[in-house]
Every structure is written in C-alpha cells, then in structure tokens.
Amino acid sequence: MNSFSWQRAVVKVGSALIAPEGNECSGRYLLALARFITASREQGKEVILVSSGSVAAGRGKVSSGQYKVKVRQNPSIAEKQAMAAIGQNIMMANWQRFFDFPCAQVLLTADDLRDRTRYVNIKNTLREIINHHALPIVNENDTVAVNELKVGDNDNLGAYTALVAQADTLIICSDIDGLYTSDPRKNKDATLIPVVESIDSTIYGLAGGAGTSVGTGGMRTKIEAADKCINSGIQTLIVNGRHGETFDALLAGKVPGTLFKAMRTPSNARRLWLTHTLKTAGRIIIDKGAKVALIEQGASLLPSGIAGIEGNFAQGEAVEIVCENQAVAKGLSLYNAKDLILIKGKKSKDIASVLGYETTNVAVHRDDMVLL
Ligand SMILES: Nc1ncnc2c1ncn2[C@@H]1O[C@H](COP(=O)(O)OP(=O)(O)O)[C@@H](O)[C@H]1O
Ligand SMILES: N[C@@H](CCC(=O)OP(=O)(O)O)C(=O)O
Image (cartoon, rainbow, N blue to C red; front, side, top):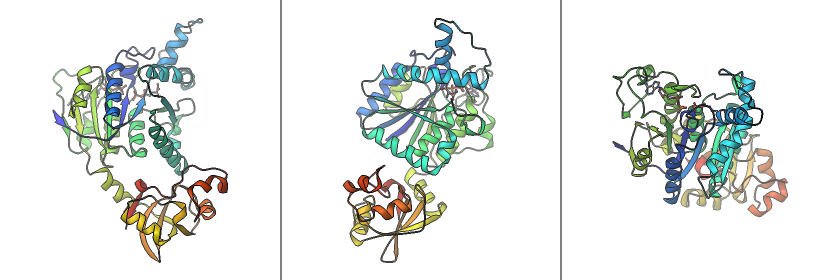
C-alpha cells in the first residue's frame, strides 16, 4: 500500500455509502468512518466532511411516515429538491449521533463558490467552525441549486471545498476500492490502480457511471475532482468506506485504494496562483512596523498597520501590499477598499464599532499572502 501524510482533509461520503438502499440515510457504514474522524481530530488534524444523503433521507421519511407517499423512481428536479429539504436535517442528525462535538451544517451552490465575496465568507466561516472545534458538514444546497447553479455531484463539491478550505487532502469514500481499469461491476477482469501520477484522457477513459440509483456521476466525477485537486497541490484518495479496515489503514498513513498524487505542494500551488495568476485591483500601504511583522514574524496584516489605500477593490480581490513605495507582498483583501479606508490604523477592538460589523480582525490573512 502507498503511504500518505496529511494535516487538513476533506472527507467526502457518497450516496452509495450513506444511503446504500437508496431510500433512507443509513448509519450502517458510518461508525468506522466517524471513529476515523474523531481519532484524526485527537491527533490534531482537521477534518471537513462533505456528505450526500439528503435526497435519500427525505425519500425514506415521506414514504415511511403517516401518509406513506410513494416517490417515483425518476423524480423531477422539484421533487428531488423537496426530498432534499426534508432530508438535510435528517442527514445531519444521522451524523451528529456519532460525535460528542457539534456538527455544523454548510449548504453551498456552485454560484456561491464563483462569487468572490461569498467565497471569502465561506472560507472565513469554515475556518471559524474549525476554530470552535465543530465539524463542518458540507452538502449542496439542493433546494435552490438548479442547472447552472448546480455543482451536481458531491465529488466535485468535495474538490471545491478542499480548495476553499485550503486542505492538503481529499478523501473520497465510496462503495468501491478505488479506480479500476474499468468498472469492476461490469468487467470481472478489471484491476485496481493503486497510484495515479497524472490525469490525462486515458485516465478519464477508464471511468464508468454510478454504481447505484442514488449515486451521481460514478467514477468520472471522482476523476474530475482529483484533477482539480492535484493541480492545486491537494492529494486525492478514493477508498472503500464500506470496509472498517479502510479507516485503520488511513489512520496508519496507508492508502487502501487509489492515490492521485499532488503535482506540487499546496503552498507552492497557492504561491504560483497568487504570484502569477491573480491580477491586483489596488494597493494597501503599510507602516514599517507592519512590514517587519509580515516579513520577520510571518504575521497576517492587521488594519492597525495600514497607512493608506489605493484603488477601489472588492472584498476577496488581490492587492499589492506596499511600504515606502516598495512592494512587500501580494494577497487577498478580506475587506473592500471603502471599509479598509474607515478602519486603517484602527485597533482590532474598534473595527466593529467603526464599521457596524466585523467579519474578521485581519485585513489580509497570512494564508492568502505571498511575500514578494
Ligand atoms: N473504472 C472504475 N473503477 C471503479 N469504479 C467504477 C469505475 N467506473 C465506474 N465505476 C462505478 O462507480 C461507482 C461509484 O460511484 P457512485 O455510485 O457515484 O458512488 P458515490 O455515491 O459514492 O459517489 C462504483 O460502484 C462503480 O460501479
Ligand atoms: N446533494 C445530494 C447528493 C448528490 C450526490 O448524489 O452525490 P454523490 O454522493 O457524489 O453520488 C444529496 O444530499 O442527496
């Protein structure tokens, strides 16, 4: 088995695992996985869960309740959305019973992830949920997500979550041991591929569709997710969540499935993106004390060290950080230019009273900054 190490992982639990019968959200395969999450947190690691199961949970609830409503085998989008609305809290409760720390529900659409301001807010919220020792549980906001708003499958949602949360690892837990040379349910000669160094059309060519009626995407969307991640320095694993031994192996740093190797380290990928891809929309002028803090202490930029603002940038846009006319760093601003003008030079404790709100006491977070 290949080895891996990690510090912050997104663990994606597919419909095939949480709703094995397609009707109802089940706990059958979740205990070993929950133990893995708890043990990993006890080792100081950070976990974000991306869980499917709301549609199946809703369907199970309406068909078993007082009215015993039959849901069609191929329901309309609106019916699925109604099932998701009924099932999201059932799916959450299904997880919460395994943990004595709080679970935090995060419902996202593709549109949320494309919008710069919402992207920053999602990132801040995930960071705060983890700081408060709760477990973020992400799912698609199925009740509002139609067509162009939809990520559509939770594999790709898992990849977007790993990117926004700056995870180093995405672990996709499904009902199959990993990526095979072809769909093993259709071809008994298919063999497991333990490691993938890079993803090209040959790898995509191996993928077949979903294995169950509740699964969305099958292997193709898992490869798409891995493709997004490994290019950003996030290693991706596909493992079989139906076997308890899977999680013993993962805890021991082994990959009991397929490992898609990261093409570079997450910090290098991020550095490249920040330095070369992002265009700056303005400048933040800082004082000498802030420059020392940024360069020598690796600190985040606080409003108290800001002397001036140039440009009319939005929250989440890239800015150049300048001291005495020399570029010191580049990073993503957590406040828009107008608000930064109001809080420049102010102490953290005064931000809320000046703006009437406070999302964070940091202007540019260390994680979103590259020194020049
Ligand atoms: N090359 C392949 N290797 C492994 N599984 C494959 C492959 N092609 C298609 N599959 C199918 O993908 C299924 C897993 O995807 P899916 O049913 O969408 O699960 P989940 O709900 O966990 O996302 C497997 O059960 C398997 O039948
Ligand atoms: N958001 C949907 C799950 C989407 C889905 O089926 O994804 P997947 O687990 O990748 O097959 C739900 O909660 O039912």
